[in-house]
Image (tube, rainbow, N blue to C red; front, side, top):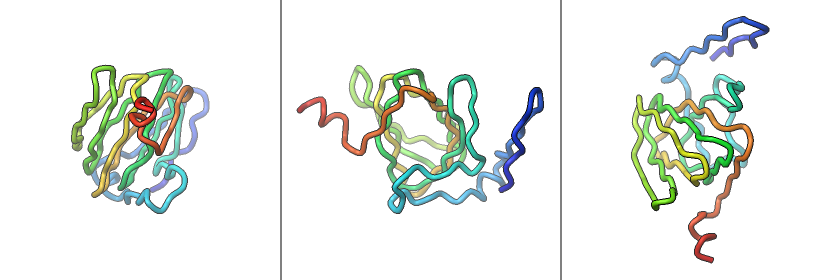
Length: 140
């Protein structure tokens, strides 16, 4: 997929996220990676957030964003999102079209054995990642 040219000044950037373009994005198997996969459209900044597309199968590490909420928009596939909030654990299976706001300060993790493609707006600062379950650290 061709990436759009970087905008200068007041130029408009357009990304093709049509059903056909999203279907052409092959989810990366996270089991074979030691870093997050590249976004098929690249990354861009928007109002203090790093934005891009994640297309993966498997289970990424737990995440925590202390400086703001994170937005996830499911474009294809599905993913089980688990959020550890003040009132306990909430899990939900997300499907195409779902838009989720993960509140700041909540550990969360996705699990997508069959693959998911999603758009994310992630706060650029104040983020942490952990392969260890944060609930284990609370009880220790």
